Image 1 (cartoon, rainbow, N blue to C red):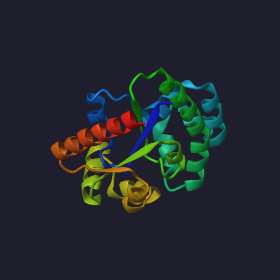
Image 2 (cartoon, helix red, strand yellow; image 1 turned 120 degrees about the vertical axis):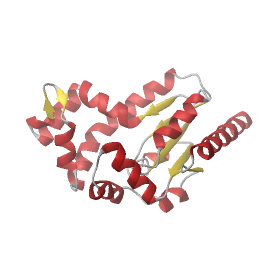
Image 3 (tube, rainbow, N blue to C red; image 1 turned 180 degrees about the horizontal axis):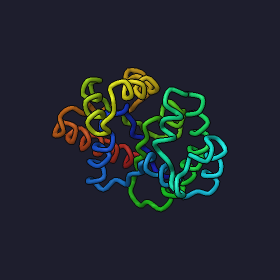
Image 4 (tube, rainbow, N blue to C red; image 1 turned 60 degrees about the horizontal axis):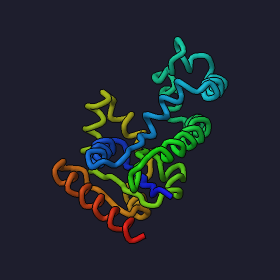
Length: 198
């Protein structure tokens, strides 16, 4: 059985940067968000269900209408949950197939809401990436040209770092890149040592 490591963190914590550091060490990385978007465009079943849920505007010229969808689910937890119930099971089965093809001792799945949707239970280890709220706000506002209110509202839908840390095996403080990279290397070596013992 391949060892599964979940990598998570709130919006703007820099999960993807950390995932790329692991990738440089030869660890296969599955970016759940990217795969979910690809599946929402590719899967006929998801398309049909999303159109049933959101109406014809869910897709434009056969492509997912992300602006429309994010406006619909913004501040609407019920719709967000319904959308996730359509997309997440498909992503989960896609991930399983992907894992089977990997050769490395462990793989990482990067996902924003591992704790929120309960999927953290299926991982052998969890790494949580943290950064101070102000840093995260700045990052997301400049990355997505998003308003402070919008970023705050996403943050409010996610668990607080303290809650995540309690359930995590490793925590990476992602403020300074060099220090974060050093933490990644340390975790990588620690995981490999643990896997050799098993």
